[in-house]
Image (cartoon, rainbow over the protein chains, first blue to last red):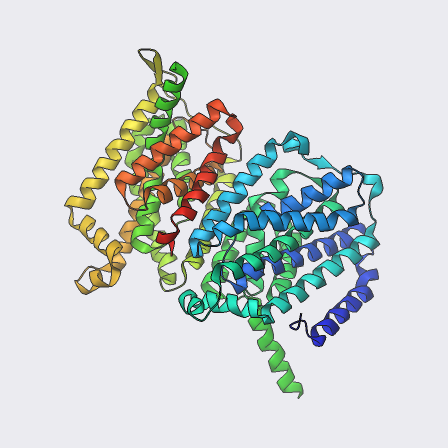
Length: 313
Length: 283
């Protein structure tokens, strides 16, 4: 864990302290605490997606399959009497297992082939989940409302998960593993020639992606208390992750965080008033980003920060 | 035994349509090296245009092909000229995402105009069937299958015998060599995208005869198209025909012997397996 520098840990602790300070503001009413929960979940999901999508350049349209496994693992264990906190390690490991099970063969594919294969896996998973009667079939599962963890605990849990995801992302970015992935993204042949074990590195990172995505699913189940296959295994979820990361800045550590926030803002405040055309608005946003700002908002923000520093200094 | 035979027969009939519906995707990939996620949009547009022409003017779906083919060509060529063309030097995944954006917009437009309700199209021959010994074959399926095969023959002739077909094949084989020998590559790209989209829209016309019309139509059949194209070998007409029929049969067998709900799982699993096994081509 040499890549986890002391600076990162300090920054992480600072972020948590900051989140604790603004907590009273965000916990003011049920709506704002729900927004905070969604923001934490989005940060977790987008950072996880970016590990493989951004660093390795392997675009996955199938992360919902991992999110769903996490959500179902937690819900079914909780219904069987296990405390929700204790279900989380199980949710993460099951999602990681499932991720490795399909990531191992699929990650041999590159670029558009990988992207298409992930759609196939995720859609097959969704259909099968709709037919498993033991897990509630298409009507899903309702969790014990009376055991709700309450807004404060949910806020703390979300904050810890989100900050941890960003720290993991920073650690991967700096590690041998991350550098290998980036080398791979830039030139697969050269990377293989300089000793990067192409397939194994991607699968390792994908396992981390899957575990974090499973945790996000688990968190989602714990705060919404109701899951259905069409939502937790849905294609829309997979797409929203791609959008978040593209909006924020693909392949950077802070890009997914920024994107998660921008996405939530757009979803809640702009698209809510445009419900009829929200798919088209997403489509237009996607086209706009790709044609005009393919690197997302993060580089622009960094530019702004540098500019301000220069002025001040 | 009769059960098995009729399952096989219906699988073959559906499979030829699958092949026809998928071919445009393979053609566009072969010539432009672009994964056309907007293929689903063109399939759905084809179904809706055909349904609308039938509901408003009583036009037969088979006649509406005369409209969906040129319309698809024009729309496809426009998308290529205005959007895809700008990304010709970017990694393929960017174009894939861009075309996904196009699809979202089309899907949303269809929801706005027609609503989300399932609609269906009935003709005088929709419910007719033909008894062939112990088998009963649905007339619309027979007609659609015959039209698909005709479409394939026309396409094969076009690619083999005409100058445009030669140019398309040249660019698909080696873009730079084609450009050096004076093939207008830019124009060929627009033409290929146009033909691919025309194929998709006319496939929509044919499929409106026995699938319900919803804005989600394309989502389901886009993935099946991928499956057929990847299995069949992208631009190989014969291979795609065999793959389409294979998928049709596999689906019908699953639906009949296992569970109707799992029909679509087959294509997704076959798709992923085919991709992984074709890894050598994919690199």
